[in-house]
Length: 86
Image (tube, rainbow, N blue to C red; front, side, top):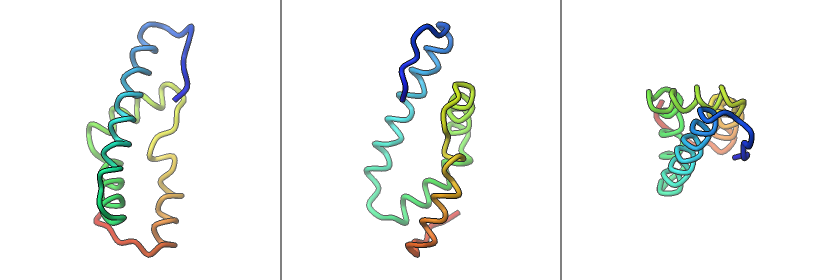
């Protein structure tokens, strides 16, 4: 994620929070054992209350969210024939 120098203390704190949350999310995805688990959890993460908070913070900082890559992700899921829960 980009560094934000010169931002307000609140923006810097928000950026630090979303950096940590994003790193934790990446590690969680690395632990999944199948493509199906990735798909299922990606879809859940689109709507979870914790993810919605992080997505709002990302948007307020002008950074991308899972929603921004959802269509591309779902297209790849279809191309690969991966099944997952909604």
